[in-house]
Image (cartoon, rainbow, N blue to C red; front, side, top):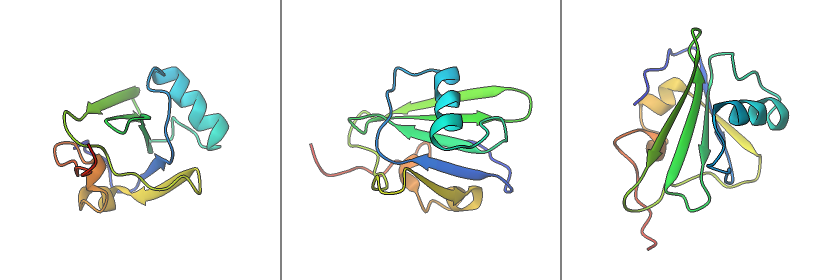
Length: 112
């Protein structure tokens, strides 16, 4: 799990993102689509179309980081694409309310 200070938010992009995007392209997506500052310290989580890959964009105050996790089995369970972005707190992430994006403890979808 990424150690996130408790004062920051975790923004989950609903739907799917193009996983060919890199750090700069995802930061631009955060600015344009979510109207948020990608350098503000919050985490931004994106899921690929097939649900097996996520990318996490985070600026820790010193520089931008891009984390990726690919599941060998199953899929990440994701919020519906109604709002475009869903916000949870870092403590909610730490307590596993969305375990599907907690590194090392992914929920497995039963679909093949």
